[in-house]
Figure 1 (cartoon, rainbow, N blue to C red):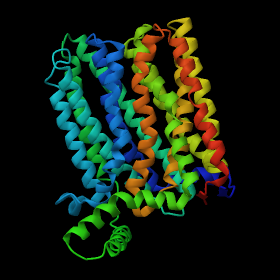
Figure 2: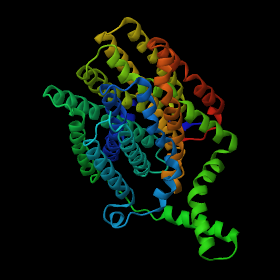
Figure 3: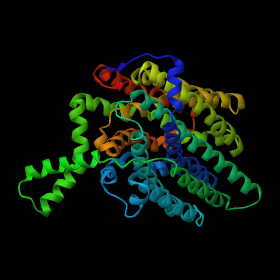
Figure 4: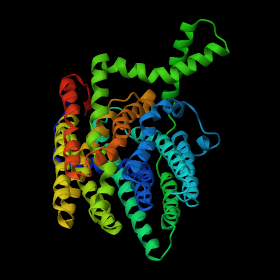
Length: 458
């Protein structure tokens, strides 16, 4: 049962004025930007090079690495980057390394043609996805650690700011990408997308500069708790030697976070949480994976998409994410997730209307506004929910586990989105109706476990 105390709207809003929220906003921007590269930019690049919808959809399987980043999350909780950790901190050191890998990958994309080297393009995209997924582990841990353990309302406000940051990085990054590509294309450059990736590399550099404004404490409690777990495991193994110490380190690193999660929630409730997390955003992912292809096919230009889907969508997302955060603070995240789930399903139907009426700028704007509103509500509630479940001893690992399970549904299943549209013979209207129905199973899971989840929302 959720425990929270009502406060005035003014007091609720004041939480956003905490300086920590600005730092969380910067972290969200850093996390969201890489999705522009392997999402809309890569999809449109391949589309304009003449590849099929199915090929583009299956290329999206590179997103699947986000579903499995928990496998190496324990290493990020434990392994320190030589020199960088001492200079900038454990979390920030990891982020900087991943940003450098993304920057080098963009330089590589600048030198290849997708039609002649599709495998190389996808491989580089996979490298970006791995670096981005690894970066997300650290960004989320650093974001959660900005807030105290018992600051439930600040955690929800922080979730809202993280979502605003993520969508800022994704939407405004998309505006930069699409406008840069259209600009270079208008100048007559055949390799306009390759030039665009160099421009996006500048954004990566700016993200690293912004990272330096995010403080990182060096707590000892986390390491001490991890060491205690290792010693407990080693004591059960018997003799103390290199082999048992190594086995204890590996077991504590990998199994410790999982055992902690099931022990805290109980086996049945833990499974219910995982089922909900896996299914909650599948419909949104199916829509998102094919949306830019849909816009292109019904006649919108890159400039139109930049204005309506990216620019207008960003403004809408920022406003409704902040409002969604306030709603979650005042009513609780469980109620917020039920409301946002219903909104997600309803707004997907607007795209069916757009598909059946044909190109309509006003309907496009309406669909984008309401879809982003629903997505904003859903994301802030979802992020707050899983942030409040993690054990600070294993912040990176447990959050990565929950987030990656949610991503698993969105990436692995949504990879078939292009094939589904082809199977429907290009009937986009029916496709969007199917995406609306996809939210129902997750809400059933949530209803079954809602009275047994213990969240502190002080």
